[in-house]
Length: 322
Image 1 (tube, rainbow, N blue to C red):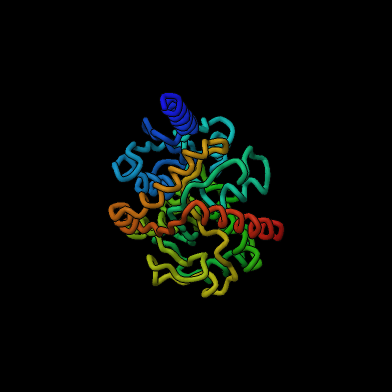
Image 2 (image 1 turned 90 degrees about the vertical axis):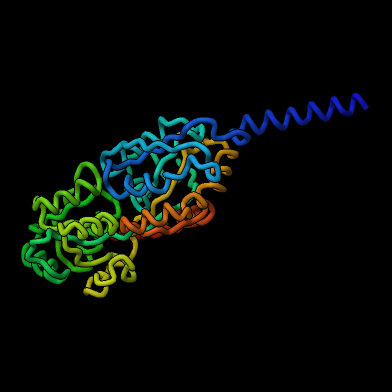
């Protein structure tokens, strides 16, 4: 009997050691950091701070999540860091933006691809929109198309970077309308791109619906069209680009969520995948996202894995033809 008890104790100790070793048993034991590849004040940063606000609750992770901004080169600076330098221990998370980092990896010149990360859950889907300053002479998408067609390359248009959703929408617009624009990627992400429109530094901008919603609420911009298949509930008065005569689909819709570097212990991934979607569903989180004009689209880890794979196929075809 003593031998049996001793053997059971050793076995239990082994199981406990394994659980601790894979980071699952007591995870998390200290605050967590989440890297955002864009500057403070933009849509990704704004939303990341909201969706992680309840992380410290006992019914969530029980530890707070702090945001670390690493902006630059349309997200490349932050995602390069997450893929090549960040610790894969579960205490360094990253916010992802699709199609951004997948499109960038397809075009090359970066240290990451979809295989560099493990998705946890998706919190939102933010369409690209065409915006102009509140005092702009443009009042419809057709006004913009007419000007761009008559003045090749003269329509200056801001966006958050190269081969982010904004840029993809711009490329689709040019192809669909047979015109050319001067697309200007701004440093600092969507917030800086929106400021360029409001300040009159550019004639138009392609930005996130959520950024544009807040700017329109403040009376700073007009939103002329949405790059999606249907009108958005936040902007029921704004037509889609398809409605307005440009054959632009939803390839530029910005999916946002949480991921971790490849190599993060599976126990940690499982704990996060189990907990984070429910954290996104918190009523306080949903209320603040709605107030900020930020469309939510919650997906589990398995659903995100499918979405990433499908988007990669779509983007490879799309980018080859642009």
